[in-house]
Amino acid sequence: MGSVSEPLTFMMGKYPAVLPAELRYARNHMWCRAADGRARFGFSSYAVRLMQDVYFLDWQVNVGDVLEVKQSIGHIETSKAQSDLFAPIAGKLAVINEELLKDPSAINVDNHGTGWLFDMEHAEGGDAGTMSVQEYYQFLEANWENTQRILKGQI
Amino acid sequence: MSRHRLTVVISQAAGKHPVKRALEEALVAALIMESGLDVSVIPSLYDLSPDHTGRLFLESVHGDMVVLSWLFPRAAFWLLDRDGIKGHLGETLLKPAADDDDDDGEPEAPRGIGAVDVPERHIYCIDLRDAATHDPFIDEVRRIAAECRTRREEKDRAASKPMMVELGTSLTANGTNGTNGVIGEHAATMPTFTAEQLLQAPGRRWYPVIDYSRCTNCMECIDFCLFGVYGVDGLERIAVENQDNCKRGCPACSRVCPEQAIMFPDYKTPAIAGAPVGAIGSLKIDLTRLFGGEAKDAVAQAVAERDRELVADGRDAVGMSVGIAKRQADKPQGPKDDLDNLMDALDSMDL
Image 1 (cartoon, rainbow over the protein chains, first blue to last red):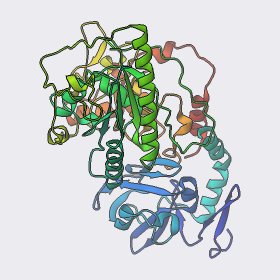
Image 2 (cartoon, one colour):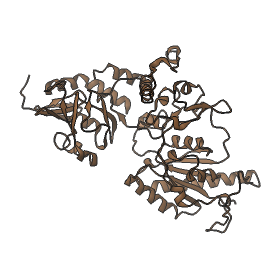
Image 3 (cartoon, rainbow over the protein chains, first blue to last red):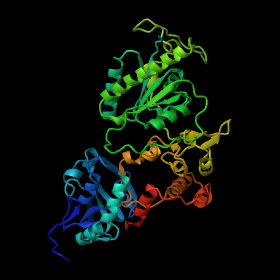
Image 4 (cartoon, rainbow over the protein chains, first blue to last red):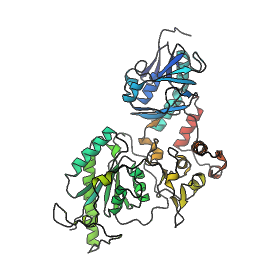
């Protein structure tokens, strides 16, 4: 394990996706910041780079809903892509970032800060089901070649 | 030389999207300045019920028509066909601007059963999402107007005297054409509808639309749907018989259709909403599976959607036991195409 304070930078071709070390990461490419029994989620720089400019974000769930991991919770449309969105962990949806529903551009401008998506209360507590920055980096590395092939195949 | 007017219809977006409404208004303002056009605005085509004034108006138009809507042209064209507003598909040259890539997604030649009772006129469907400002649309409408005029003139030369045969009951004749004093061929036959009648807000609807240029009448949809949406008409052709039995948000029959002939024009996925078949290249990337979506094939997804609606109706889920064609089993194993390869690549990923 390397130093915890240094961010890791995953190179997506020429584009550097910076992964802050103090965050945890979910397999659906969201970062996770846990505090006081809650976890805040947002898109990792990797996800933002794949999507590019976000046009439209829509949630199909409400604050207070109890979500299962990988439950379908919403939809996003960007300049380059669209996707359904899924719950990164199991737990109760505590807060949704309402600002993004009016203007989702903060996802592109400040994905680790004002571009956060929602807070959840862990069903299992702690960091259950998320990865450290090193683990996420390895996850990205292991899948990068395949991801590229998929993207090129689709475009 | 024959003069005829081209009917231009703007089908509004459902809801009150300000950007869309602004484009609609700009278009109307520009189009009414053009000569030789009859311009009308109606609510979203998809939501029009059989007795809605907007649909009655469309039905009363017998000549060439341009329909600008927020739907894929294929969806709009077959939606009109379903509503009894038939014609030959006019080709629009306005295409989505976004795509820089090569245009190799040309759909293969249609091999479906086709439409019946198609009158000798053309209907052009234009997708209002294909440009951000009104100018390209105005240019395209002008081009179409010229094309229709030329086609009409050639036909007139071929058959020395064109005759308009009036079908249906007496309509309010309103024969004079303000700009040039010549009696317009449709102006004479058009009933008058007020703007209020035309724009009366319809309820939102949800139902499948069949593209008969692709439909082979295989009947898989009628076997699959357990809500009685499909039926057959007098010619034993598959038809959407009870469209309001359809379950809002459920596109399951579209997924099981082997020819991609079933469209849900309002569905979020372009392939189901009626995007050109084979033109996946011009569409946005779907990152769903990278972002944690389940790796379901289309049939499994359709079965899950159908079960959800059955349970919501207080019926029992049937899973794969009803209406699943065995075509997958006895289909000869052809070489893998791009989509197969893409799906294989996704399956092999650790998501």
